[in-house]
Amino acid sequence: MKRMLTTLIVCGSAAALLQACATKGFVREQVGSTETKLAQRADAQENQLRQTTDRTAANAQALEATGQRVQGLDTRLGEVATTADGAKRDVATVASAQKEAEEGWRQRFASRNRFAQLEVKTIYFDFGKADLKDEGINELVEVARALKADPNAVLELQGFADPRGSDRYNYQLTRERVDAVTRFLVQRQGIDLRRIYAVGMGKLMPAPGEKASRDTLAKSRRVEIRVLAPQS
Image (cartoon, rainbow, N blue to C red; front, side, top):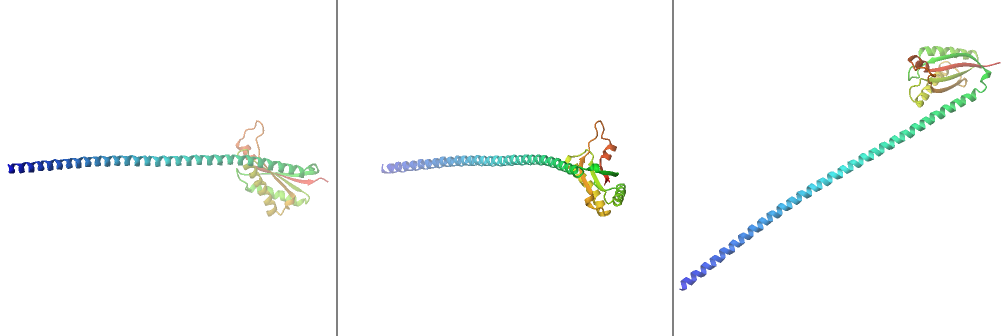
């Protein structure tokens, strides 16, 4: 009887131990599974966070690029407006310069009826050029000869350009043409600068009904030279 009781006690203890071991294993399994799920969830959330961060950075870069493009457009618009204002000022400057030149010319020759026209010459220029050509130089040599023959004679120069191009460009071009004539007479022929009155008149428009042919355009690119002497 005593042996049987001992056996029962041992078996009961073994069963309890086996049950406890099973319970611990189950707990470990459940804990491990829970940890795995938590780790997977944490990884998924980390990936989502990383993707959100990447999208946010990309959006920020796109916004910055858009801002730079908008700023560039604003800058170009400002440059265009500045250019337009400058062009308006240039036109006004050219018009003012031409007006002043013509007014000064009228004042200088207000008593022009007291001058007699001794000689008239015309020299022509290539398109967009202010360089003297050989035939033009020959004409200027004759003009210098007439001035030297009459110490009281003066010279009137008027420069013209054909109607192509802007007013500013053509006004400057005609100034360069009369300057080229003046330099040749002063530096190469020894004519006193005070005897020369020169003005750039800008582009010469065709007469009403006249077509701008190649010949008329070529004749527009000229400097008109008038030798004037006081009437006695």
